[in-house]
Image (tube, rainbow, N blue to C red):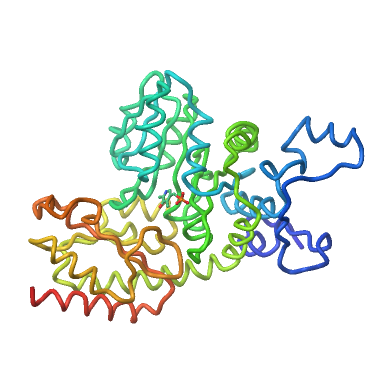
Length: 394
Ligand SMILES: *Cc1c(COP(=O)(O)O)cnc(C)c1O
């Protein structure tokens, strides 16, 4: 088998697998062990000297996790990767490894909620300051860089509003200044956006979403240079003990096998649902990065080869009850957090605030986000139709 790291099929179906070492089984084993034994003191000494060099204890390296790790690094076009118990743990380790007291972080505005918590509630206790800025205008974003900025934190597309950052321009600015760049690439996955190729130092993604794909496990990934992954492994990864467990790694490997097929299907269905939503008069406006109506459409086309299954929209509503009635009436779409699984989802922004605070003049209060899963798109559209039709009577 040719070692072609450009070939997604090779990476997903072959890379990192050594069938002869496990009875020629097609499915790799779940190596459910905490520790590994040695024949000689010398072999043990070697393992102690470099925990990244071999198997010693499963808080560090584990063979099942390693298969996944190799595939995820290659998909990202990175030298190495680390797989964490979930996405939040990956972000935590990637950020903690690269800041110290007195440092400043420039972050894109409203990143993922637990990233905000890390910045505002945890790092603030250790003398690390954070500035949030709109990343859609590169010049004004980078104008927020300070003398002590050590890290630029990106999320493109950004949660809910889906606005994007010019990754190449930001990386070109940061590299020569020694500022580390991290992106949360969960929205696109490395199949549709390759931040490392654009010059970003660390590509983070939650594997809970598209990689797992079945809403039955959590996982998180950091990918980057071998030196950066080594630095994080020997410190934050081993110390916090937040690496993924073998069984969850095995579930993610299982999910990964079908990732391209699922992403293709989700992309096609999302386009169909999007075209339907454009005809709905109850919708004030739609947000989808690869739709020509998107303000940064040209940049999106340039740095993303797809946009997968998330669509945000603003509903026309005077009362919070209208949004609630619509959401409550859906049957195909389930109301739940997360995304990337087989099942289509809806989440209204108004679920995050008390009903009495609803203000129809604040568009954010009238915002909803759909995730399009693997169902037949016509099945989903019929459900949305009955939901919108039910509002006519209100
Ligand atoms: C879900 C999510 C995360 C966190 O991942 P977990 O696996 O849930 O910890 C981070 N970023 C984005 C954009 C997410 O949607």
